[in-house]
Length: 288
Image (cartoon, rainbow, N blue to C red; front, side, top):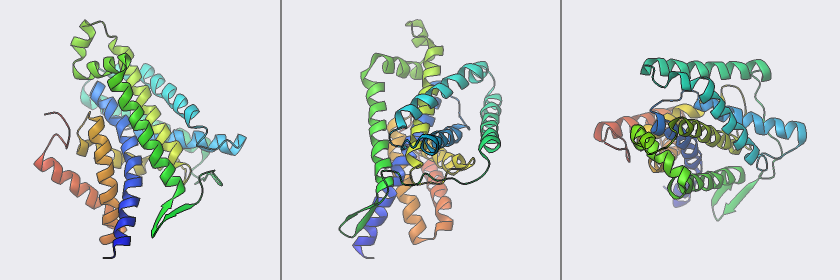
């Protein structure tokens, strides 16, 4: 096998893996703080893609420039959903929580189909169109910018969680809700913050993807399954685990699609997840 092909596979897998990591980090944050699996997480990504598309279609705002507004919009959506839906099911049985977030997924997808139709849409002529050649290796500029954006957002989230008082309070709530409450931390506020940040991460990922990926109501399903695999592989509740697992999944998916066949790449990724769970049930960096 020529070294140029291996380098191209590694680069392509790394770029898409970083996007997977950003999507999964929002999902694992919500679970880490609240122990709730959000099946509507892919729909947050879809809303972020549509927000960037309509800003571009109506006002010619490039998706890269609208990312801060997209993050704020999805943060508000996440907080609103927590206050109106999730807050009422926090103490409900797990099955009720699953049905609630699954129903939310169906609702958001149905609303998108109603308002925007099932057509595939594209953002044309973004400022990040084009390709970069580094010797024999080709970089898609939109994919490269999206990957760099994912790294920056992930780094910013890590700094927030580990170097700020509010982030420390969020981490404390994730570790022990009762003890955090006794220390004066408002658990409900932390829960709302977790949903807001989780939705914002998915929305930013959607905005980055909108520069090169088709936009349609079911687009979230293309990434939500992979995000769940990444979260399980990295360990539920582990931000670092989701980051590294996203890169691993991206590399395995691209390599599997090339060496075995694109129709088998999802099966290969799922097989990797099952293998890791058999050897290490808590995931690569999850807590026992």
